[in-house]
Image 1 (tube, rainbow, N blue to C red):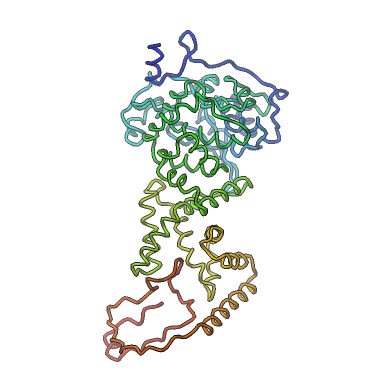
Image 2: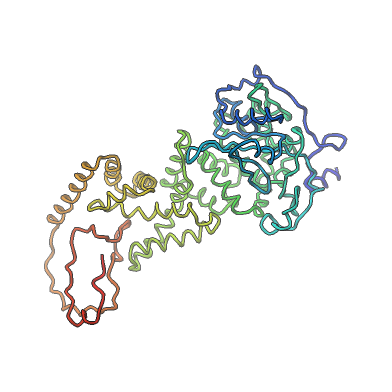
Length: 525
């Protein structure tokens, strides 16, 4: 009992009688039993396996792909496991790249551009007692120089920081997390290799952690998030977390505080962009993990019931289910739009100009909600474009609509505006007009713009005119006065004027004195 308690504290994996780790028993399951349809296996994954086997190595499709194949799903990603080292794998393929420090793996790339496909190849890892690993005081970031030469290292909590010691397949299997993710499929022989009754758990629809769950969460706290994701993805098929696997989740949650923010950010996106966003949020609430995993995820869970955010989550799940691409920038832009809109309204109420007010509101949201975890790169740039294009949808005359339709982010911005219309924030007529405009020919587009201009002119003619009020004499305009922009009482979604307004301001004639002084001309609208 005491030894078991000490082993638990030190992060040792549970052992079989005699003190040896329980590597399970190798079972080779034929196709007549497992029933995998070989047509569901990606040709590129088969090519990777075949190339490695022809070079004299062991190679199998592994992990979640095997799990999905067993339940009749077509996997979206295929991983391969082999006894070849990363350097040996890289030498067999023309386009292969070794990545990672914590776990060194190889990405074998097929195709180019947006249509490219990556087959992830990992080397069988050895079972290592974490109590015997090299220990560092910090994490991946604070101890980077210290970790540089280490192959197996843990921090003071038992979390694995380096795991690059190679071993046989049976030891690799016990290092994996769930039994249903620890099976190996050979597409050449159609044999499934199973060490931990993964096939049995697959048939009984059970999500079971290999070994003692609390220890496995301590080794890698991100397994907590993976447990939620798998439960959400597989719950429609009847899968449930085994009680001993679900039990330590809440108590283990504090271990996530030591995980790098960038890794948590990536895991959050996997929760929300694998086609089961709403189910993942429901699982977080059901398991008592609705808050505390990651600040931005807390916001998503909190706002999932809002009509606009809920529509965005449903739309993301729908697109993934239809095999269409999804971008994290779009979903996060929807989740944080409420913050942007409130900050924008507050600035307009203070009399600030519309466009800079919107820009400042966006910057405040980035600082408060996202920080620098995304590097303020493409993700932030795409979110900014989606938000900044929203007020421009109100402009349907002049050249603005034509320029808008040519913007690279027009489709994302329009989809965003369409969701706003569905949530009652934007007039449905406006959304329908832009949808028709985006699909029309140039001639039809011009007719649509002309019709809007005629309607606006008619509305101005029919607008009731109030009694004239005598205006006081206008004071001479100072040369250092800033040009006026959109008034502070502009309605929500109003945009800066950029030349498309129907009324033109008369050009003010400059005096001879000002010409002689070389003063600037009137500010452009």
